[in-house]
Image (cartoon, protein in one colour):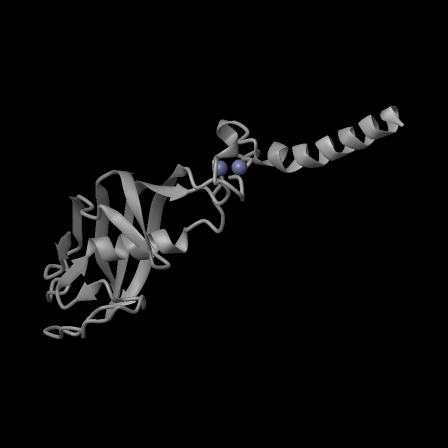
Length: 177
Ligand SMILES: [Zn+2]
Ligand SMILES: [Zn+2]
């Protein structure tokens, strides 16, 4: 979603405020894609605060499915964004070069503010270091990949049983002597 900044960049510096929708369906972080499970409208305001500076404020609530660090089950993580950014206002008529770098103003291109890119930056800032489905998550079995929260897989028993039977045999042999 693109917000038109021509009002605030005009001679009158009329503040621009709007409620827009977030058009992202998923978010790419560290080379992986994460689906957006839910998203609210974005309330956004842009006003001139001093010469050549814009203040962008906005709120938005998003829910992203992030896999649990231990068992990989998708965990809905809520991002309750309430942000304020100040950026250099672009010189009239300039169009910035296309760039993938996440620098401060890569979401402003001439008279256009790319709301999705702005939100993306804010989500990255709040991205959690670690996500767990629960503090007591048991993770997955390193042998068969079974989610151990859903029940034991038996791999541990299989590793244990042969040794037990050897011991049983030893006892049996003693008995027979
Ligand atoms: Zn888990
Ligand atoms: Zn297993």
